[in-house]
Picture 1 (tube, each protein chain N blue to C red):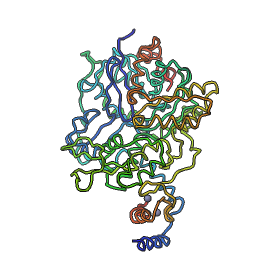
Picture 2 (cartoon, chains in turn purple, red; picture 1 turned 180 degrees about the vertical axis):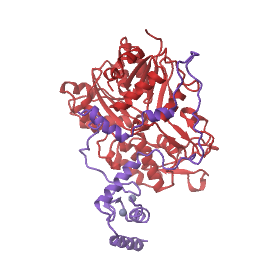
Picture 3 (tube, rainbow over the protein chains, first blue to last red; picture 1 turned 90 degrees about the vertical axis):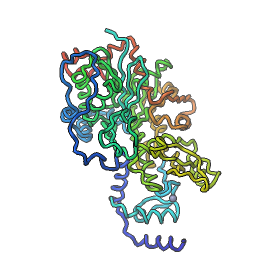
Length: 153
Length: 394
Ligand SMILES: [Zn+2]
Ligand SMILES: [Zn+2]
């Protein structure tokens, strides 16, 4: 076991090393993934969706409503703006702080802590190839076999 | 004009808290969900209760990064919420209190005003931040001068200082960690270490709620979870729901190999506390921001000197993450350690962290000046949409 592990460590030393830009790109992707709503495709994507809006019993107790309700689709088109556009717009509506951007909490005064990317325990070592943290030869082995340079970002 | 009740909609990015001020609020998922097991229809809001098998649930949310972006989704959910199927209301007779995120973007504010006056034909509207309602709730009961409201929700955690009922905007701090980041991180590490659960946001969110706690001694607890056998007092198994005999998972002690039960489980060891830990150390997952206690001190430090004492004595925590066991004590311990010795520190947690802001709306409706905070349909029609920006301090 031990010799296999150290053999693999030797192999690792000869391996390609991710440059700083690639490491940053990976780190950014990992943070972005924490924002994602779904990690799989819409299970109904293959269905031919009739654009029929679900009908709920009208809540207005008064029998006559002055006008017809507008569709969800109408409001989608009416108010269509991406998050990025809205942040950009905000710069002209609220140019001076305090605003959304200025409210962001600043970096901590305390040092960063490091955890093993494999098992989650505290880590003292950094993978030479990709910069991931690991805690033991065993976890480094798992890391090299599964992630390290394998998932390309 | 004064009605006997108002309608309160605390429109969160994960759940809407909704109901008439004379009743108990309903908690409605603010999303549309599609199930693999049910291909004939999506589930809107609390229709999810009718879903037999919630594995691989696909979410469609109106909010992105804490802001209302997908209006077709939101409109569909609101239509459901206001219908007889959920929580009916007649807006032509009932005033509406509606919450929005802090620093809500200009065009979203405009859209909110428009849709409630023109589509839902609202008579009186009060658009307000949920933290304003929470602060009102707290001040009503404590008669205090300064308050620090900590709202730790789905999209982010906001720290908002109030002085005599007014937001001190220079002191507002946002930490980009909320329930969604916690669930996604738990999903990621479990999928890498044990079993691919990347498609199971719904189930893993429940596993998080049922298993996680806030550690009071992080490094000490890390040591405990390194131990084997009965000396590891933290490790547990989470039994996953199979949707035939079990609808919701639960946490149980580890069974010996010979008494192995035929259920699929996830081993929860350091995961139990390293997940909520992100609220205290966002940098653990590469988010370069302060954790909650440090940000509370940073926020108070930016407030006028004379108000600091009162602010430190009146810190109130609410929002879904306040449900983690140990949350209050950890915030208290760290704020106490960071604050100057001669100041008292008092941290309290909402009795119901989910509905705390909604309940604040109930108190606000009874305020003798309530109607002066609202905008009426007539005012909106006569003076136009800009009046809404003057009246509502979002
Ligand atoms: Zn390790
Ligand atoms: Zn590596």
